[in-house]
Length: 92
Image (tube, rainbow, N blue to C red):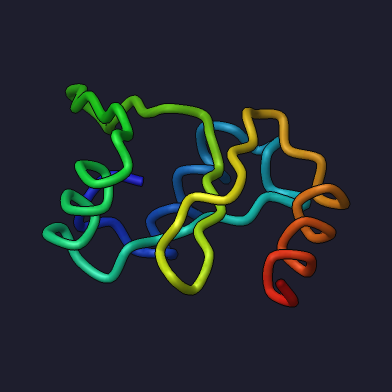
C-alpha cells in the first residue's frame, strides 16, 4: 500500500476501482511511511511510485519471530497453505 494510506483508503479504492476484489482480500498496512520504507528496503521489495498509487512485488513474505524469512508466496495466494505454514513456523 502507498505510504500514508489508511484502511479506509484501501476500502474506498477497492469499492471504486476493483469491486470484485472485496470478498476475501486482506491488506497488510504499515504503521507509518518510514516503517514501510525501511521494511521495503530490508526485504528487497520493489516499490515504484506512480501518479495515483504505487506498483510493488506481488509477494507475501512470512518472517519468523527471530526476523528470518521463512517462506515467500507469489500471487495468487492459497490461504490454506499460508495458514498451515504460519502455524508450523509458529510452533517450530
